[in-house]
Image 1: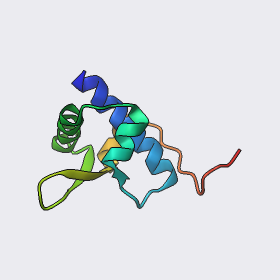
Image 2 (image 1 turned 90 degrees about the vertical axis):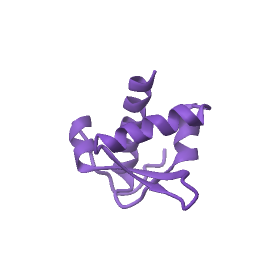
Image 3 (image 1 turned 180 degrees about the vertical axis):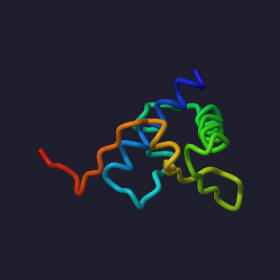
Image 4 (image 1 turned 180 degrees about the horizontal axis):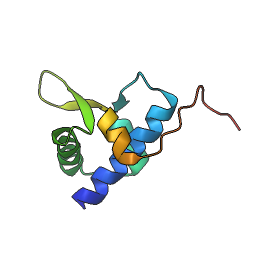
Length: 90
């Protein structure tokens, strides 16, 4: 599941990057969007992505992962990322 989860996280971060290039994504928000409840495996997947230099993480002083952002290497891994300016409302 770890490889599948890391792929899903990277894809989500790429889509988030399309709309907000300068912002990091909150871990709890990502978990909610991906419908993942297991914090331990989610953190492990984020750490794997960080070790492969595909994401940057912000970790609070207590050692808990709070934020993540895709790197240029991660964007290249995904392939196609279409930058958008503003959220489309339908």
